[in-house]
Amino acid sequence: MRYAVRKFALSFAFAVASAAAALSAEVGAATGTTQTQDDSLKEFMAANPDCLEFNDQCSFCAVVNGAAECSTPQIACVKQKIQCTKRADK
Image (cartoon, rainbow, N blue to C red):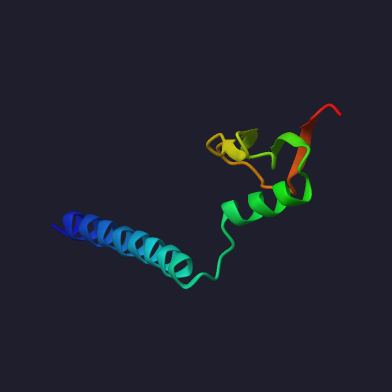
């Protein structure tokens, strides 16, 4: 009986912790307190109009028809400053 109570209590604690983490992420996004990846990509593209491919070591992007098309972020990556990896020939 004690084993079942402990197992239930542990499961409940994990569920509450997971819900709290998800809720805090949603609240941050809803209030606009976090900078989105789209904002930083737009700023980078505006500052580097001749850049055709770039990455932040997590997502790899290419400019297609004036818009960035990016890969899904890699698992366990450490996001770094966006760097251009291919520029248009002039």
